[in-house]
Length: 253
Image 1 (cartoon, rainbow, N blue to C red):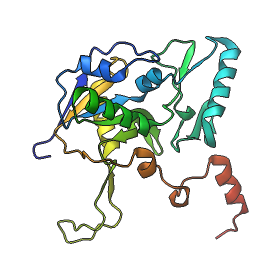
Image 2 (image 1 turned 120 degrees about the vertical axis):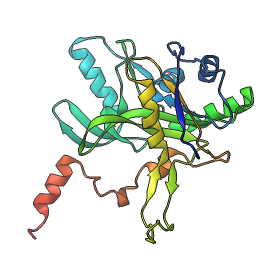
Image 3 (image 1 turned 30 degrees about the horizontal axis):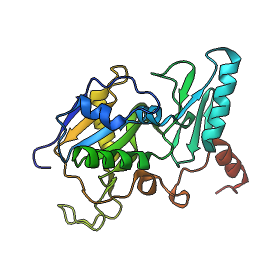
C-alpha cells in the first residue's frame, strides 16, 4: 500500500435464500471486480446461502423457548450473563453475545446462525471466483460483535482466504531502535470494520470491496487458527460465575 486504499459498497445484491449462488450474485452486482480486490462479505448472507437457518415460532413464550434451545445448541461454553444478555463461546471458538444468532433482516419465523465453517466458506468463494471468473480476489467473512470494556459494536472477521489474518511485527525494530516483541496486527478485523462503514446496518449492502492493499496469492491460514486465542493464553477466559468462585477460594494477598 503506497497511497492508501479504497472501500466501495456493492449495491444491488438481492435478498439471499438457501442454495443461492453467492459468487454469481456478487459478480453480477460488481462486474468491475479486479485481481487483488478484497471482498468483505457479511456472514448473514453466507449463512442464508448455506442454509444455516432455524425455524422458530413468530411470537409468544414458544418463540423464546425455541431461541433458548437454539442458543444451547450453538454454545460450547457459557462465559457470562446479565439479564437477557448471554455471552458464550461458540463451537468455532468465538466469544459472542447469543453465539452470533441473529433475528434481524430475516423473516420472523427464522433465526440465522453463524456459518458452520467461515474459513471454508471464504476459501470456497475465493476458489469459485478464480475458477469461474478468472479473478484472484481475497475474501473476508465478517460479523458484528461487541467488545469488553468499550461501548459500541464493530465488525470483525470470522473467516478469511487469500489474505493473512495477522501482520506479525515481532522481531522488527521500531524507528527508535526498540525491539517489537508482541505486536501482531489483526488485519482482517481492521478491514472488516472499515468495510462496515460503507455497508451499514439498515442499507441492505452485505458486501464491500477493498482495493489498494497487497494480498497474498498463496494459501493462508484462516481466522480460527490464527485469531482465536488459545485457552492457555487467554487471561480472561473465566466466565462470571467461575471468576467469582475462584476469587472466593483464593487466599487473601
